[in-house]
Length: 400
Image (cartoon, rainbow, N blue to C red):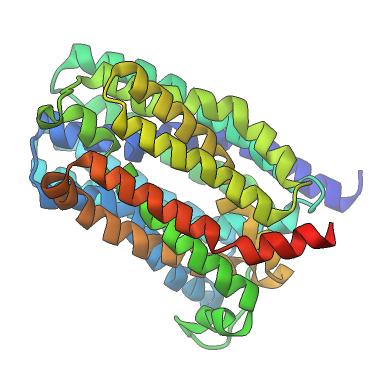
């Protein structure tokens, strides 16, 4: 076994193990943070927006975390482990002091921020350890395990929470442990170091937008797409939990619809998307994924029945699985090998910007316009983002 093969096999083995606690952690943002906030603590709109905005704020700050890691010279592994340990501390504080609504909001924001602020570092690990030939398949296999863990945990934790009533503290001890495990498995991977910088320049990665026309175009399209998608995703749990919108579901149904259904579909489809990613022209794949997002949002919010909710989330789950592959790996295809984390930090920064805007607009827009109108606005953004890529689609079609 040569050195390159040893690297990717070790990384892949540890990534498979890490997938289970990562899947468990994902249910915080997708379901349980908002369910506890709305159904058990009855927090206000500003607090709900802050909870939704926590992961987005982490992505926004990720650009600066990458610059800091480059300057200090930490490995991507150690820096990522620090972020996940911070998330574990946040969840531990919630578990120690349950039924305290203000503390809950502050700790959830801190924990989800800490979890996402290190995301660009993962792209550099994948770029260095996985070859272009198999990167999509390896990533999607890990994604399948992660989504299976999320689906299973979401279902059983939702049923458990229904029996427990207002006692959610044990749930957050589980999230605390899951993040510590993520940190441990990441530290076990072979160390990956970023391109060292001699001075701290927090905004230097923005230069790639000016220099790279393709990167600039993709970031612009992704900004429109992501805003529409995140605007609606912020309302997924609120829409079926808040009785004002006609459902008022409890923990079991909420976790089933918003976690188990989409993650079950995610499990089946992500491996297919991973194989397609390694072979299909990028722009065509991007638009194909957008079709599922577009359809999923419209069905979820405009077909007001339990079946409509499940079908909508299933379609969105197909889109999310493809979108996860694209979101996580596209910079490994377009960026120079030693600058993947920098490109990714710009990408996550703008993901954070749109996520913050969407989080604070979604609830006020839903109250004034209704969730259905918000869904139409979101779907329109996805359509516009797809149309922005038509010149590239046509150019690549002619080459083929």
